Amino acid sequence: MNLKRIKKIISKISSLFIIILLTLSLYNFINIKILKKDLVTVFGYAMLEVISGSMEPTIKVGDLIIINTKEKNYKTNDIITFYDEENSFVTHRIISNKKNKVKTKGDANNTDDGEILKNKIVGKYICKINGLGKTIAFLKKPLTIIIVFITTIVICYITSIDKGQELELKKREQKQFEEYLDDKEKFIKKTKQNIKRRINRKKNKKSKKGRKRKKGKK
Image 1 (cartoon, rainbow, N blue to C red):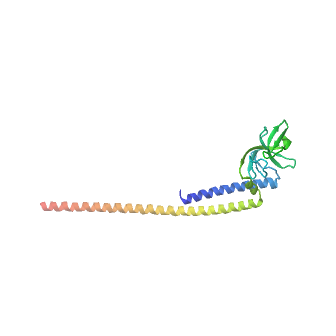
Image 2 (image 1 turned 45 degrees about the vertical axis):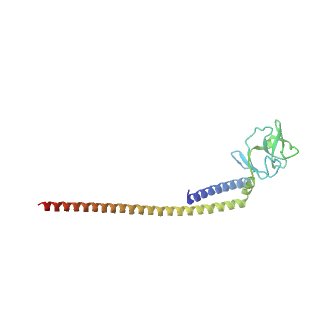
Image 3 (image 1 turned 180 degrees about the vertical axis):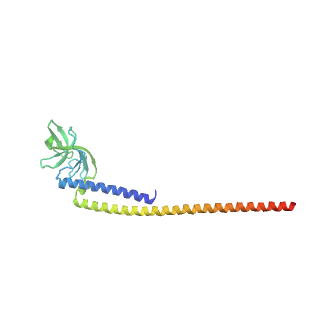
């Protein structure tokens, strides 16, 4: 794999990554700052940054957790996210499950949270991505959106220049190749003509020798 191809692949990956970041940033900004939503969901799934160590070592501070907000079937030992009395998000484990209520407790806590109504549950914990929560929090900032937007424009501009240069180079190479083919064709044609001349010369010499022999016999 040559250097140009590697550069092209890196450029495409970088552009795609920045576009995804920009999309996430704008999506988060619109939902949280403009629409005033507490939770941003995509197809029923939401991402949350962990800011406390109450679920350590299962879930650590700075982790990004993904929850399913469509899940309604909760069981004992499930990890859920719910609204507490202050209307903040809490992610703890179910230790007791009743018809309309559940009792939860953080894995690192000594005491439970008491009973909460199931209608306070936001979603069920699916998985986590270690340390990515800080990145998501960073993406929610307006300054981040501006930086990502400017970076995207710069990369697109550089990519367009590279594409222009690459196109110009291809045209130049195509022209050189056509000239090479033309020169090659001329060379082959000239070589054929030279060979033909030599053959004709040899034929003429043989013909002259034959005539001389006939004259000598007479």
